Length: 185
Image (cartoon, rainbow, N blue to C red; front, side):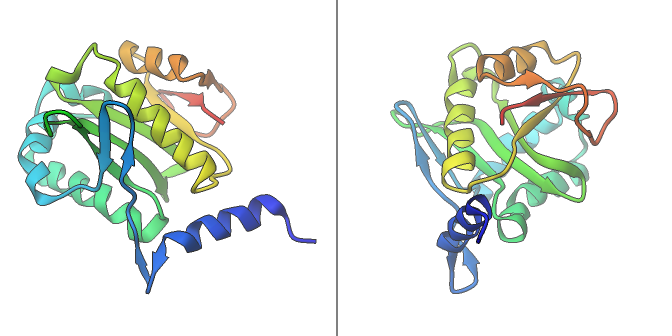
């Protein structure tokens, strides 16, 4: 008998394949469009990465590393079947930040991460986007687990993970031993 979880995951991934190409989803919430990255996102992305706002991700980063991260966020889709989506305000079209699911050799489990540009802070944007992407990960992509690796000093991200219902998992493997692991499922 086939394991139904494995079968569901295989079916979900095969739905995203189109002649060998991954269809990167576009997702909606009441206020946001979560959409694939484009080169038009580079300038704001780079500004964020070279700022102190990227400290929780190991930044600030110089241009070369920022570009590597930008390309990494895109490359996850064809390689892993998940990756990053940019967050657009549905009313204005303004890009507000990013939500992503990372995996691969650097991440022991699928990791839900996020960052917001300054204008989006304190409006519930991160929660709305992360909740929608976590739902996609569970129900469409059928991932077996989802965690967030968070710098212990990043209080805002820790609070967001807790608001999303994630719980600390002290036993989970982590890419950086100093990080906390919050388990979504």
